[in-house]
Length: 73
Image 1 (cartoon, rainbow, N blue to C red):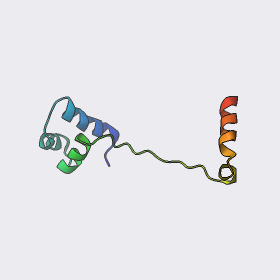
Image 2 (tube, helix red, strand yellow; image 1 turned 180 degrees about the horizontal axis):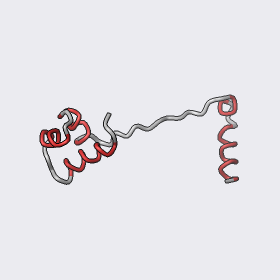
Image 3 (tube, rainbow, N blue to C red; image 1 turned 30 degrees about the vertical axis):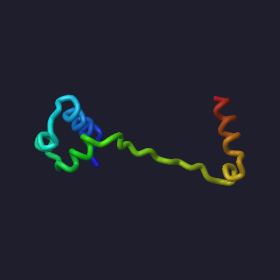
Image 4 (tube, helix red, strand yellow; image 1 turned 120 degrees about the vertical axis):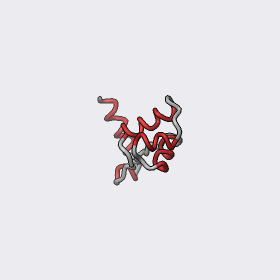
């Protein structure tokens, strides 16, 4: 996986400067498959799913406590 600045640069070259995949690959030094993946791909940001576990959440009290804590802030 590439760093975000490089991914943004690839997207910029494809969308703003309208370069081909091969031109971008030569310019960045990346494999053309990698460039194609990031240049023509949709939003690829991965979202982490965090599930709250424990007795408090399994019994249904977790949401109530979360609401109380948010209100106190």
